Image 1 (cartoon, rainbow, N blue to C red):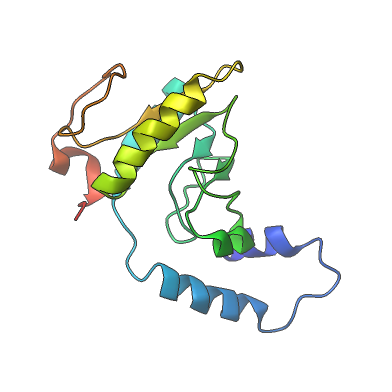
Image 2 (image 1 turned 90 degrees about the vertical axis):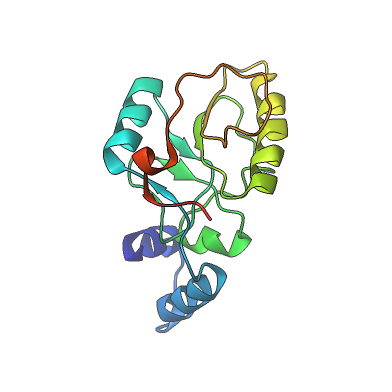
Length: 154
């Protein structure tokens, strides 16, 4: 997290002495409890097999170093390297991993993915969705909840 902050702010001529602690404090208040996390080995396999380079839903505490870029729903997370929201950032031409954290977010994610894959530029989105959501995407695998998460979804 510290490296992400300094990498994003290295171009600034001056950085206030307490800038990092202030940004960290704000991040903690925005993300008091990090959400579900995939088992690291499963995430590594997905990244390698699908050439994933973009993390669709993350935050400064959860961001995986396996991805070159990552999205956050909080604009303030740009201080730590987020490139914007999964729902508004142009992700066409990218290979994105998406693990939405709520049913509502997952529904919106399905709609957004439909738009992304209609792009003229080759675009891939690997989604991990609750089984109860209907969609017309190719299902590659089904997992029991406890088999793939370090922390459980609420």
